[in-house]
Length: 338
Image 1 (tube, rainbow, N blue to C red):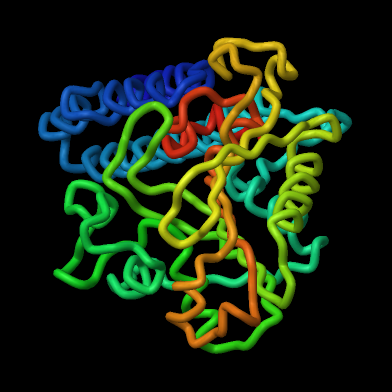
Image 2 (image 1 turned 180 degrees about the vertical axis):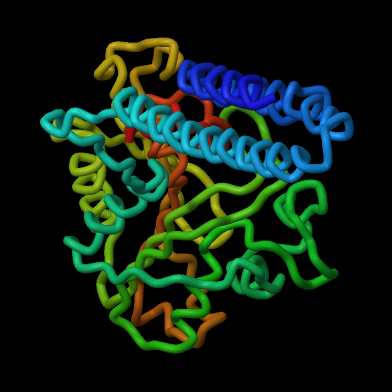
């Protein structure tokens, strides 16, 4: 029996020492310490020994079990250390390599365009102000000389919240709000979101607009032309030309649509400008006397001009974008270009 115990011990030590994975050690544990192991069989054989041999053999088997268990634990720890070392070697970093740049956020192209537009007008002496996006019919239409039968007041074109409260369709209501609180001279630009029931490749139900208003004594239409000509050159390039076409807006008289020479073909004519050489960018005009009367200004004393343009439209022209919807899709492949 003693020889069997010694041989089993030697066999276990050799097998455990040769194992190189935790799975192999688990198989050896079952082989040497499991229910069907040789050690278990030797324990069962104790019953056939004499009363004098049993204590001695029992002690030897217990010591053998402890020795095998200790050897397994020691080898398990050794294999874990080896595996960690191999993993560290596999993941070893070359600290001499340049580090990875952290991804930094940036302004949306519409925001960049708005900032640039406001910078230009601040350079011309205008103040940037903001107003509420939820408006009343009075400020959005009535005070701006827009009659009740005007198509813009129809439910199909305007997002109404109640019968008299709506999402503003333009930033022009701030003309009235600002003039109600202050006396001329006034020079303001009003950037912000506006809402209309419209959606296609060149329109969005929510878009951004910049409103401008200048009120003082002896303001002429030529002043408006000069301000917008400077803006166009600063925004779209020094060679940009400006054209005014007669138009109609309820709150300005006379009114004009303002075009710039096509920035894609430089006025020669292309698909974007429909072969005309011109691209419409904004509407403008002299402030209608009825608007002055609505805020208590004397139109015989004060004159002024107003203009409004789409910031989204300006961004499309500035960055050569042909579909407005891509500005609102939050596609990082697109946004990271700016």
